[in-house]
Amino acid sequence: MAKKFYVTTPIYYPSGKPHLGSVYTTLAADVLSRWYKLLGFDVFFLTGTDEHTKKVVIEAVKHGKDIETYLGEITNIFKKVFKNLNIEYDRFIRTSDKDHKKFVQYILNVVNDKGDIYKGVYEGYYCSECENYYTERETPNLICPIHKKSLEVLKEDSYFFKLSKYKDKLLDFYDKNPDFISPEYRKSEIINRVKEGLKDLSISRTNTDWGIEIPFDKNHKVYVWFDALNNYLTGVGVLDNKKLFKKFWPADLHIVGKDILWFHAVIWPAILMSAGYEIPKMVYAHGWLTSNEKKIGKSTGNADDIEELIKKYGSDSIRYFLFKVTPFGEDGEYFEKNLVERNNELANKLGNLVSRVSSLAEKNGVEKTKNKLFKKSYLKKISSLIKNLEFDKSLNEIFTFVDVCNEYIQNEKPWETGVQKDSNESPESTKLHSEKILQNKKILYELVDSIKVISILLWPFIPNASEKIAENFGFKISYDEILKPIKVTNIKRGENLFRKI
Ligand code: MSP
Image (cartoon, rainbow, N blue to C red; front, side, top):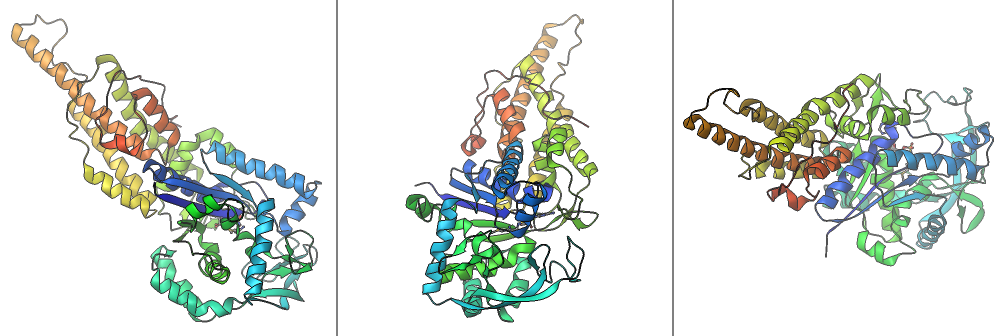
């Protein structure tokens, strides 16, 4: 049976259109999903939207639309942007999906029967115009970010999940599963906070109609996280598709932004422990894309229109740019000029190599020989880097190989025949001439075979370009083809892969 890989992204608040920051995780999940598909794994890749928030209601009203229409439009934009970025997910889950609502109510009953839910009083900072609570983390100055007026302290009845009960179980789990919280440098902060003690989690609100009803009290709606986190179970068929669920659960990897690591590394495993489900293998927290050192986002107003960026640069350049320079775990500054630089780097390095080699090979043909440029050790290194989500380092490694090929063609000059065209050739120089031509063809073969390796390894990152190369060179994109010498029949030059700007 093939091995499996189940990867998820956070589900996004559809209170606005997606921006670079909100496609970042989904692209990373797509890179990994493609990588594991290359390796022959059965992959399930889940993404979607987190719809039961007050902000959604506010936005719908602002646009003069009913909630369903508004959400339908925004989720379609998300899907379109994902498609234009070549993101191939297996399911786009919406928390308003029927199976999800049904499951959230189901798991609430299970956790309640276990004695892990009780009724209490929630006290928080409230804006009556938004009809919404804000945490101190969201508004340290206790001013409503939308209405710019002081928040009031309000109390209401709420159901609580007994998170505090799971402190020791969680600590024990982290101890036995040292890779669960990644990268390593984010782990101690979480564990120290858990050691300090856990507060029970408020999981319901009475002041809204928009949300999933608490099954044992129709006056309460589920409050965000208890609803949202469960998408990872619903998405893979926990209620309606036992076969799928059995195959893919537990998730192999939840990729999340560093701001929501706590919910995934602490609250989520506690809910799963309470309800009796296996715990995912890893939660990986990535850094933020920033602009002038501020997190890119709708509310910060520094989010470029992603659809414009795709039109201007194409999806490969955006994908390459996002992962080439900044280590995935850390924050990275975005300026459009960096994107232009990376786009041109692709054109200068990979684009040039492919166009030189393919036009010579198309014109002169190639001669099979052993490819001395490619070393198996590259492959081992790149595999382990991608597995560890060290995308920047894996791309650097692949592009070191691109550089090796560029130097090789530059030094060997497989376009020179060694003979002046109009010279009166002696039999000896004719022999030299044909030897040089044969040698050129062998050099080209090595380069063609190397480009095959490079394209297959780059497919998870820049699928458009890789697929075009594969078509023009006549090979299949699969891991097994990496070590098989390429069978060349005829190579087509094709059009330029990248547009230099
Ligand atoms: N709905 C919750 C997640 C629930 S998951 C069960 C949420 N939504 S969000 O839309 O606010 O954020 C979704 C993800 O996008 C988070 O992981 C967040 O870190 C990420 N990003 C949003 N802006 C970002 C950047 N500027 N840079 C990188 N990622 C950022 O939280």
